Image 1: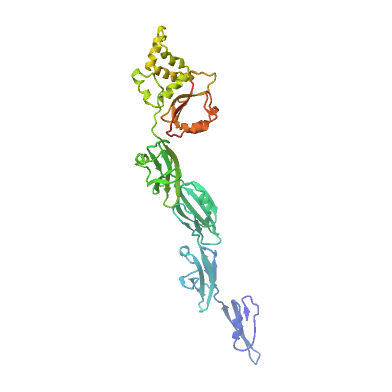
Image 2 (image 1 turned 90 degrees about the vertical axis):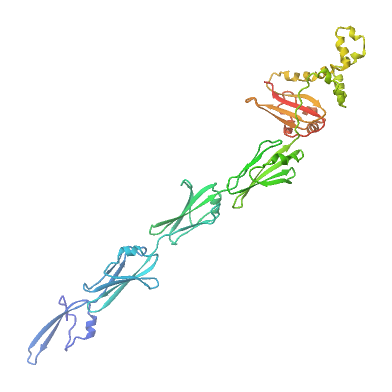
Amino acid sequence: MKDESGKLIESGSGTDVPTSLLDKLAIGTYVVTYTEMSPENETHSSQGEFTIRHPETTTTVNKPFNLDKITGTQTISDSELVWILTDAQGAIIKSGTGSDIPTDFLAQLKPGSYHVTFAEKSPEGEMHTSTGDFIVRHPETTTTVNKPFNPNNITGTQTMTESELTWVITDKNGAEVMSGIGSEVPEKELLALLAGDYTVTFTEISPEDETHSSHDVFTVRHPEATLTIDKNINPEKITGTQTIEDSTLTWEILDIEGNVLFSGSGSEISNLVELLKGLDEGSYFATLTETSPEGEIHSVINGFQLVSEVISPPLPEPTPPDKTNEQPETNEQPETNEQPETNEQPETNEQPETNEQPETNEQPETNEQPETNEQPETIEQPETIEQPETIDSSDDSEEFILLHEKEEFSYVEYEVFDENTADSSQTIVPASTIAATTKNNTSLLPKTGDKQSPLLPLLGIAVVASSLVMLRRRNKN
């Protein structure tokens, strides 16, 4: 027996070539020659040719992950070639014939592990199979925001451990606010966000460079109430605002010790004037609290004062004769009349006692003084007190002028002129407080040209007491 190249493979005697020899023959074409030799030494030969062939298919998967081509081969051209695709559990997904599995079918495979088998069946009925394995996987991240408002936990997932996971937060205009790597947005980053609407995106990038992104939205909002009191003294309107439309807004009126006197809800204290009418003079506080649907609370507090409606008396003017009789009705008024006597008037007060004074031409005027009709002329002395207004120092310093004293009330009026706008404002201060401050130290009283008087911090407080002191501050210009 020789191969197709003429090389002797095996020889022997007998009528049959041993089967064991034939089974060992490699694939190829062979020639076998039988030779008969007679007793007369004659010979005769005959030949036969045969081929050894066996099916031997191959299976080729072009990529272990997310392949796009699977092919099979056969060794015998007239063999039959079939393929079978099964999942990880061995269930047949699809089968067919030929050397290629359609690519459109492969593209539709769901993520998972698969096994493919090619089988070649020769015309002689011999069968040979080959197999291949592959995995279909695609990135598919998820994004989870734990709360739609003010979230404190935002996480993302990835389908492949080998993938890279990134996140980015953008504002409502699409501008990037912050970004990072990993499956969780750090809480400190979330706490740093300003109020507004945001979108968070997680993106998974697989080792095959496939990407997948998922999104979610959230809003950062915090209550921030505002409180407006129309006047610091004897307010008539207190209003507030809230930053979140569906927040609740509540208000309280407190005394100086923090005790709640009145409370309610809404952005305005509608009956404020009526409520305050029943309160004593003093300092009070208004608070406004905004509570968001998320339970966050923001409170704002502001103070105000309640004082009597005290009107500053005008500077005394000459009193008509018919009103001089009213002054003695006040018990202490005579004492004030005596004070002018301590001024330079004593001699004029004694003039009425001498009857001879009328002989002088000017004395008739003194004769009228006993009638006290012209006594108010002595009250005109406060007009001379206005003379400090004419005091004109060489510099541009401000002037503080003591104007008037009266026993019925006690406050200090402090009038401020703005030299740029010519606006002015007035504030009331208790004289009792001034008295306590300046007691035994008259140097503390404001002086002409003193811009830093110790009394200035006292401004803004008002009470009713026993004597009236008015203090005016103005620029001499």
